[in-house]
Amino acid sequence: MMNNSILSSEVQAFIRRHAHENASSIALKTSPFASVSSSELAQQINGWQKVSTKIPEWLEQGEALYFPKKLNLEQCSSARTGKFKASLLSSNSTMLDLTGGFGVDSYYFARQANKVVHCEINPELSQIVAHNFYELGIDNVQFHTGDGIAFLIPSRERYDYIYIDPSRRVNNQKVFRLEDCEPNIVAYQSLFFEHSDKLITKLAPLLDISGTLNVLPHLKDVYVISIENDCKELLFVQEKSFQGTPSIHAVRLSTDEPQIFSFNYIQEKQAAPVLGEPTNFLYDPDVAITKAGAFKSIAITFGLQKLHQHSHLYTSENIVTEFPGRIFQIQQVVPFSVFKKNIAITKANIVAKNFPLKVEEIRRKFKIKDGGEDYLYFTTLFDDRLMVVYGKRVV
Image (tube, rainbow, N blue to C red; front, top):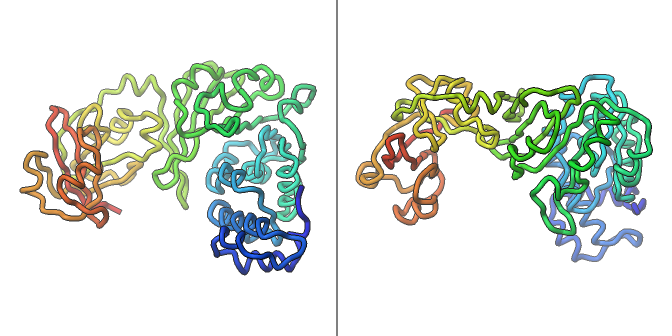
């Protein structure tokens, strides 16, 4: 269980004083405190560092937060994704967080909802979250220590939402099929819908979206969430009365408002973008767009030409600043066969899309160092010509 000595003012001052040091080096030194080991100090410093990156506002609000083991922190949500998920809830609602973990999502749900129930099977982690929420001034969360499914089965209470973040690590092994996660949410669909009309499930970015569409009933919305071109998580929202085609939302989270591109797979299948040569601007979609599968829809919506059916790069004469991804002003376009003769670059950012060589192979072949402001896109055009597009990033 929690070591309350860690919460003393002396130990907390030590943690803040050494917060930017290597936690592993702290673990190897002798602890200055009789009741707190060096490994416990290292755990708290590692936790402080993780939270300062993922949820910095917690450190501004809480005087004496307690941090769990490293794995619990690595699996938790960030402030940005937590805030976005909370924005999907209606105000004054009730929420059951079936797999509460370190409580980041419950924290943001509690700022939007009227009541949140946080279930956590790990007794120490449940105790830690309860303590931290008290420190953070969150008083509308009830804590249940134990298995969330076991808590729900005998209950007669209904909630506006049930939130589930099933573990992708079972017996210390990563799993990738939805049915292999814990809990197996596919097996408990009837139970969930007995207690709520709306289910929100967070899943890992590697999960196959189309496969999940086939096993989760009443699926209304899928959110593919990215931060700085890194896909962070998938959200599947089910609504008991919904029978239509799910909407897919590619969500780019930044410091400003989220940028959301919405479509569905029927529209994507029917879309027929124009294929064309690179002109003045090159567009490389954000990972949220490509993971969501909006390869053709994005071209139609923004009036862009596609370089090749499978290249997933786009072009236009005039700049489209609203495009969800990176935009480049094209400097030169040359056939791959004469690339070295026409573009004398020794340092550049290289991207290979729908191209027979990998990035490292290209670097070795042409002796190009990584970095700088120049970008080289090695790709295939619609008539199967191998081409190199040299561009500069438009900020």
